[in-house]
Length: 68
Image (tube, rainbow, N blue to C red; front, top):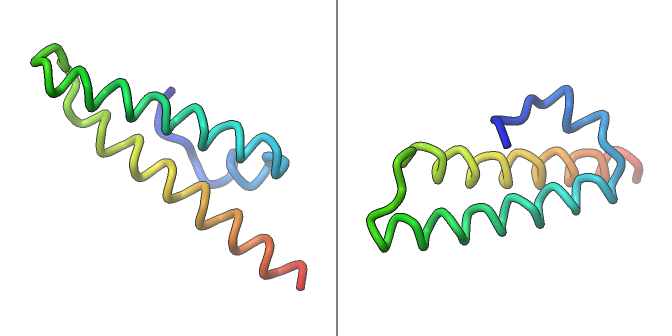
């Protein structure tokens, strides 16, 4: 999964955001194992996945607060 743009995230439904976070967490888990075993080639992907998760959660929180 490539780095996600904020406009794409804002267009997602809450369920899609939850699914994206779950998928990114699985990817991050697998990347951590690849790094531990020395098989990880793209080390920057770990950082990107972590930031994508944070980006999605931040936008979801902003949208929840805006509804109140």
